[in-house]
Structure formats: structure tokens, C-alpha cells
Image (cartoon, rainbow, N blue to C red; front, side):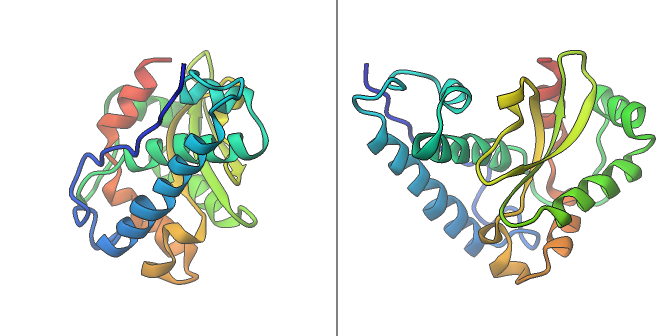
Length: 197
């Protein structure tokens, strides 16, 4: 059975994340980069052993060009799906907040470590907050299209550190971009992802 993946629908308007992420960046990052990954994967699947598989299964079982495009689609769907309009003093609540405090000592300590891992990842990739099967939280650096789900972790939150995610708005100031993202995290989405562990 043929699989035809489609570009995800954004849960907000293209200008809803300004000034943290501009409409122009969303237009390029979502409208062009993510669309290209979707088009590329759809062109690679016909006649392959991955035809008919879910995106998550393709990411876990593939390599090469199929993996690179499937991984980028999965990563970007999680990335774009975790945002909301900017909020002052935007902090987590509930179970995810308790888990962050339990695993990192405080929300501020977690933010500092997460931003450091994002700022120091060499080249292109992603920094992730994930949960293991027992609910313990871990921060990982993932190069290129990699995703923590490949190692059995549950991805909860991610910052994209490919230059196309921030260069139009922040030029080469990756740390400034990472610091600004906290105000647009929809912690309800992260909490929902954590609740399925």
C-alpha cells in the first residue's frame, strides 16, 4: 500500500510566534524546508520496504536518504507542534514540572543545561528533552535528522539548531535564539507527550 505523507498543519498562524520566530522564518522553515522533506520522502517510498509504514516506524528502521527525510519530518512535526504565542513567565506545571525539578533540581537548572547542550552541538541538529520507560528525563544532542525515539526514548521537547531555524531572525546568535524560545513553548503539549510514557 502506498504511503503519501502530507505537510502538517500548523496549530497557529504563521505570524503567531513573533517576535521570537518571524513569519518570514516560518514561511521558509515550515513552508519550504519541511515541505521539501515531505516531497523527498514521498518520492523515495514507492517500491521500498518502508511503503505503508508509519513515520515513526520508518525513522526507527531506515537509514540513508529515507531516514534523513523521515527523521526531519518527525522532528519538525514535534518542533512546530510544541509552540504557542509568546507568554511572559512561561513555565511548566503539573507532572512535567515535577519531573523536571526531580531530575534537574529546578526549572532554571534544566533550562541552563538544555540551552548549553543546544548551543554547543557542533554543526546541525537538535537538542531534546525525552523520557525513558520509567519516566526519567534526559537531555540529548542529536545530529542531523536523528531522534531519541531511535533509542527507545519518548521525545517531549526539542529545539532545532539547524541554521535555517534561526538565521533570518538571529543571524549567527544561536544562544540568543535558544534563550528566546522558552516564551513560546506550549507546556500543555509537552505535558501530554509526557503522559503517554
